Image (tube, one colour):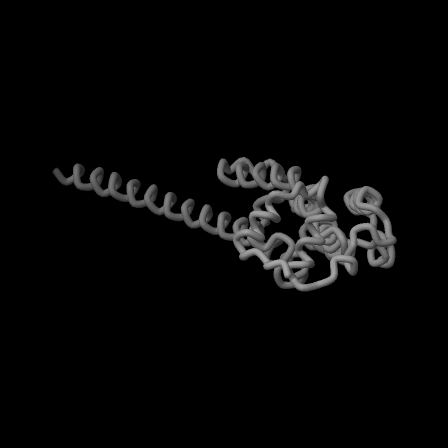
Length: 215
């Protein structure tokens, strides 16, 4: 009887697989490690292949980016169980699809922050690499005080509403939303401290000037 390798050997073996060219072998090896029959989760079982699933999801992403919405069963009937990364994308698109009305209501409540709200919505829908570029750009704007996005100064209020009224949306990028919230609050405090020092210096010079009058 073959002896199962240690956990370290198993991990080394898994890392040796090419996830694209040897996806079937990788999954089969994982299932054997778990004591399951690889045939039960074969990548060759009936169902759409990866490219077809991705193309379908990208079509839905495009519809949502254009401000539309899709029928819920259009997402729920897509077979993503075999592809964890595409399953995560399907989940994200489902969350955003369920909150189309929420983002519209945000725009109605913050008409002067329409640019910011649309930016956040598009960043949540964008492919990972593009979304990261968008976030870095927004962070850079906040650091420089440029606020080139319409309504960026309302980001704390908008993020607070997303957290309280749309926790599913907030959960998609919890760390980013929390970072935006903290960054703006810290920037506001630093401005307050800066203004406080300006007033102290002005009062000091005024005091010196008054004292000179009595010299």
